[in-house]
Image 1 (cartoon, rainbow, N blue to C red):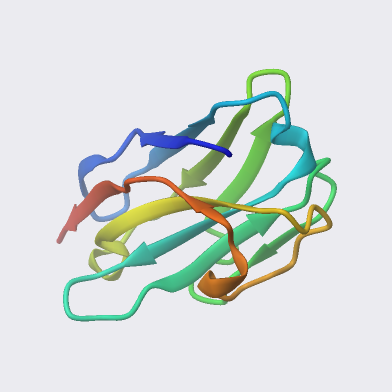
Image 2: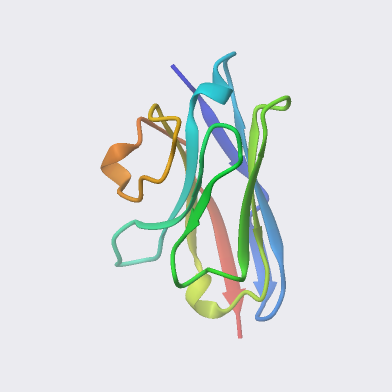
Length: 125
């Protein structure tokens, strides 16, 4: 069992930056690939980024490529999402998730095994 707690959300103006963190419980954090998803009001949850167990492989949604960076610190049991050049379309609840397929690359929410409670990101124009 893995428990995930996101933090770092908030309100920012367009063009600004935020860094989300997701702290994981348990001793097996490095056994999981990790992902970030987001869900805007009235929309389905969508993939944002994922990182494999070692941090050596990352994947991004086209909509965030070049603006967002996913990273992890296995010593701290934490995964991060650095978000730059934010725009109002990035407004959503952001969720982190753990995938037992540690090699990563999965972009469908059903492939993830554990989820955090989400953190709100609001970008104003």
